[in-house]
Image (cartoon, rainbow, N blue to C red; front, side, top):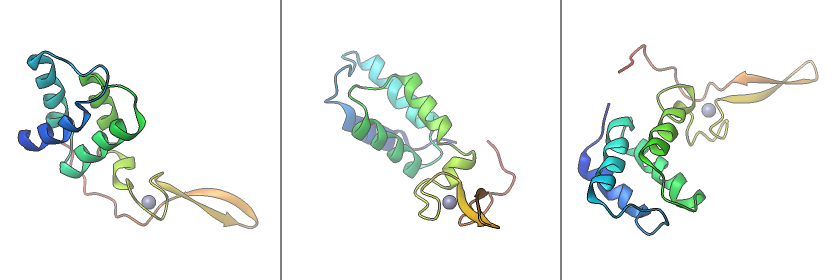
Length: 116
Ligand SMILES: [Zn+2]
């Protein structure tokens, strides 16, 4: 799974103004590679850069990018990223006999068994 390098680059450049942005071209290339390699698709890459852009004061490292993409990745959470039914949590609250319980969100279909 990877995305076009040019896309990864253009998204990443949105972070260029942040403190900690590397000066060395090689270091920038590492960031691009991390986004390119670990993102499932363009949307995934964009939402990753969005979260660093909006919620982080400094430039992420290549490891930060990888970790962010892993946690929002093809596992359960990614399927519900942006899901309005569960607010991206992957589960919803249901009431059963007066008790509030968490139940898996069914607003998004289960993916087929395809990994890698
Ligand atoms: Zn959901």
